[in-house]
Image (cartoon, rainbow, N blue to C red; front, side, top):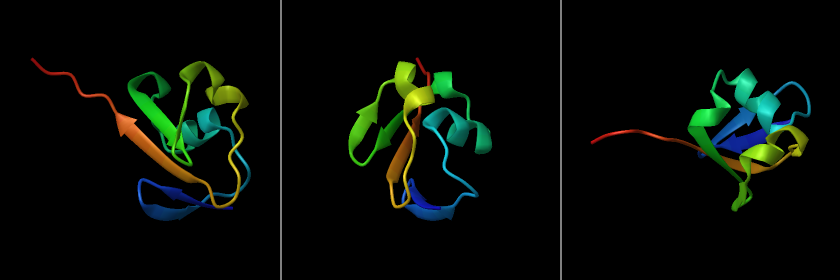
Length: 66
């Protein structure tokens, strides 16, 4: 399955949910916002949101500062 993640085409081995993709990429779900096909995915729906071939995903990390 081919996804575009943060502008880069990426092949993943099988269909995944947003949660599974973040685990696959070793990204902590609590520290990011995820957009799929220009729509924000709410964190409480990551587990139920299945990605599809050709999806365009943006993953934005939260950065603290002061």
